[in-house]
Length: 129
Image (cartoon, rainbow, N blue to C red; front, side):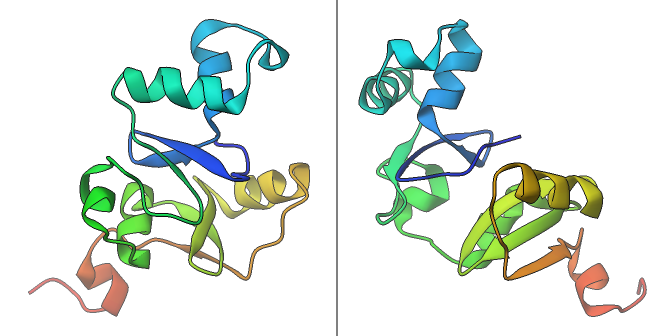
């Protein structure tokens, strides 16, 4: 599960992670052994999109083209429960309990929590045609 994003993030499999979390997990290094900027530079060099929270990603697929819609942010979380604050997805998980546990563990507060629909039919409540 991604930890809270502070300023910088890296996109891995459509999800935003803190760069130090990704590099520490991938290498086994202690986070105190490198800075966020070192982690970003290494991950960007490996082809992972990196950016700041306040700016659109420089090289992140749909995000690279400036798409910043909530729908695009929710796409990696289809079928999951998510916690949202503003236009930011804080966390996505398989159950509401996992989302609440993550929020509690990281001292975060969400404005809303919901399950991302698996299809337009699920979103609208209509049945199959």
